[in-house]
Image 1: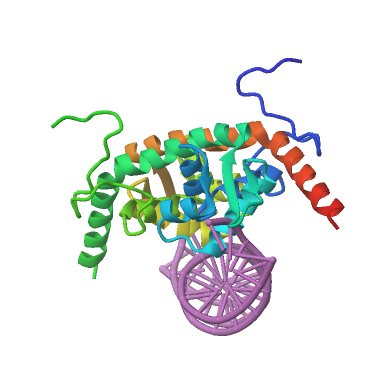
Image 2: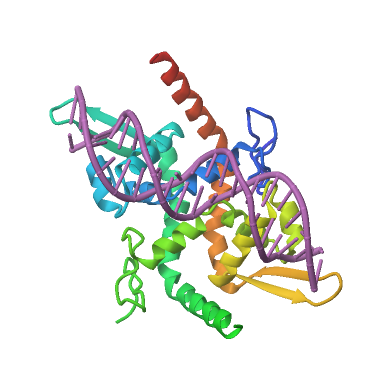
Amino acid sequence: MRYSPGMKTMVEASGLPADVYSAKCPTRQVLDHISGKWTILVVDALLEGTLRYTGLMRRIEGVSQKMLTQTLRGLEADGFVTRTVYPTIPPRVEYDLTELGRSLAEPITALRQWTETHINEIERARARSTSEAAEAT
Amino acid sequence: MRYSPGMKTMVEASGLPADVYSAKCPTRQVLDHISGKWTILVVDALLEGTLRYTGLMRRIEGVSQKMLTQTLRGLEADGFVTRTVYPTIPPRVEYDLTELGRSLAEPITALRQWTETHINEIERARARSTSEAAEAT
DNA sequence: CAGCATCCGTTCCGATACTG
DNA sequence: CAGTATCGGAACGGATGCTG
């Protein structure tokens, strides 16, 4: 049986087709994870190359240490990111995308770019919807 | 001045370049919005065509009325979705993607498909990371 | 059918203080 | 430099009951 377009991947652990619309499908947890507040920014940032902890902090304005660490640990667990520690003093820790992480970065970067490209259309839509709400009063 | 690849869109309201890495850039709120728990599923579901409220509930397993309504209102405000009410009894409400919504659906669907395609690799990575954590004990 | 209103537990997340 | 630990408020989100 070969792959044909439109055919679902089978989840090996369950033998069921991968389907984010199913509440219990593990793809759902992955999607939830990806749509965390900082995940997209971290993955996208690492696409440009290796970054250290502080470098990520600087690149991603507004992220706290706690959230950055938490996000990186999650990405590591899912196999998207590697963490390399150089036991020097002071310590040096580098983060990189794995091959899996780089493949995830593609759709993620597309999403970031889409947002940056269409921001003015969205803001115009928002302005319309708030003015409509006001005149309904 | 014409568009060249790699050039940022200018946010009309502020005159600053669109940049999700900037904490105060409006693109950041949009990205936060898109990465809500249900947004991706709703947009992706509507790509297949018009759906009614109950149809969306059925399609997206596990979503509550509250969250579905909230998500749809947000998508409407951002100009991604239209809501059409037919004042019949019982009422009939149809949801559709706008043109802007359909353009957003592209990267979103790519993300869903990526998740469904790579789920087994991710689960293997997770299994590895939990076994490593265990043997560190 | 397509919601809205309310309650309420859970999770998120930022701020702060501290460490090898 | 690269984190860990803890606290408290805010937001998320599910369950339930009600409505035109």
